[in-house]
Length: 591
Image 1 (cartoon, helix red, strand yellow):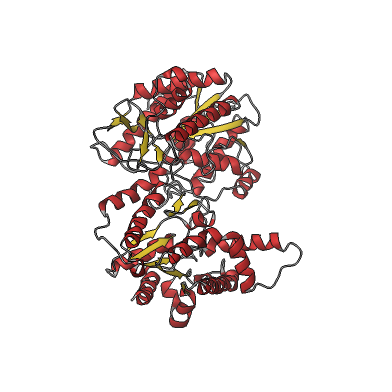
Image 2: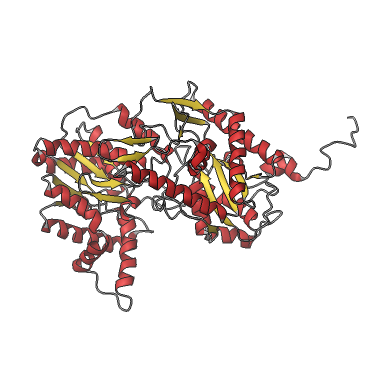
């Protein structure tokens, strides 16, 4: 073998080699050393974030970690520094700077949709989903948002911009939209809107322009670029979505790399690489292989902690690892990240399967239990409208607005409003045809015991700080009045308008799991109190838990075997066999 004493790789550190730099790092447990070259001049910086939905994960983690995160005072429904929602392309952010400048030439009354009664902002399709009362108030709200943007930038030390997509939609005036009109808000018209796929040079130029605008407001601001690891939900190109996604992410990553190497205004943080590096036992994506898991977010942010701590290289110690485990942010159904992309699939299903009948007698709405029940009804060939509208956490956290004409407006995300609009259309047809007495609604709004029992305990500690009372129906009814009145009023109003409402309890499976068995008596008391409330108003309450206990001799065959990523069992759902049993029971009540 030839003796080669000199090699350009001879003096490289271990981070330069795949084996020592990647393979030898225990993904999820250890952090990569030497992964970035970001050095912040400011200790405890004030941080703002903007961009795709992954930016909300970043904001959640920063908030939970006690860092100085700038939260928009206008947009309180999302973890966001600005009242713009998700902006997937640099061009969409750049347009907001143009709106802020009177001489920019941009028409401030453009990108507005009106249904004849309300006005909707297509530049912020997820903001004010119920719309504005006038065009003037909508434009005024835009001005308020850009004013807040300028004020926030002025006090920001670090801006994290997460690049999400290259694919976009624009109108005849070259105004770009954060989502295709008609998907979340508005109506799609191919004579007005066209697809556009940004190229390398355009994205690079737009980011340079953004840096110039930012520095004009705050010369000391630090810009950190990241690329979202979340894949496209769908592509408008003619390519397979896998090819389109790789193209999009490659362009964004190339631009970020070039700017970081050639422009001192930019730094790069490798969220994309940390999430997408091959892993034999992958913990980073949910089962849909798109949604980033809680563990993955925390793992990325462990690396980012070295940026905020102004450390040259992160040191892995037992104490550090223990601190991370204790400070992880649980992002489950009680901490939803708002992401319009995630709802495109649900929207597609609605478009593929519109309501074909003028009236459907049976309607379902509620949380995931109603979605599973809908699946069972479909298997039993029982025609119905609806199913899941929002996550249980969205109902318990009041992520909706009561509305006289629409009962309520879901605020969890765009898809929830799409799902409810289909249900509402069916209900309104009953009312218009004076056939409400033939309309049957099955719902579990007000249940959500996996969330509401914890809320009840917190309420109990607040109301009775000295001595806790005996838990009676009356105590639970007081809790319902204080904490659940808005949720229950939705069903009460439907009942008053002539619809037959059946409220169904959660399943009984808490008693079969060690982690939840201690709550069994309280959960069953909750069901009893809810049954008492609804009986007072003439609403049918179906206590599925008690009926199941009385009838089923082999409950283990109906239990969900799902284990969440944090090791918790899914004690609050049943399996498909349970929902088929429940569907057969409920259909008898409707006949």
